Length: 72
Image 1 (spheres, one colour):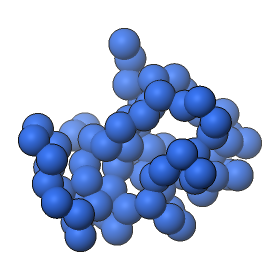
Image 2 (image 1 turned 90 degrees about the vertical axis):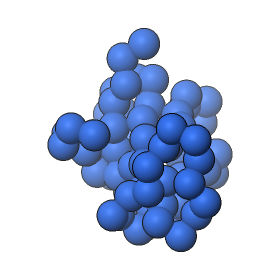
Image 3 (image 1 turned 30 degrees about the vertical axis):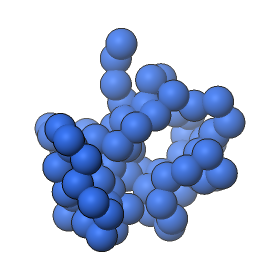
Image 4 (image 1 turned 120 degrees about the horizontal axis):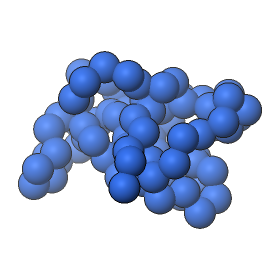
């Protein structure tokens, strides 16, 4: 499955702060959270998430997400 990476800008990722039904997980955890096996801590306040599909520009604006194209 292709993964698309995004950086939450205003709040942590959750079912309420992302598009409904979106398949996602952390690529890098927020620095204040416990590190999960296989996931490194992020330099960004809310971490970096991966999603199972590319988000639209409107979704990125509405949910305050920035595309993250830097290799992880």
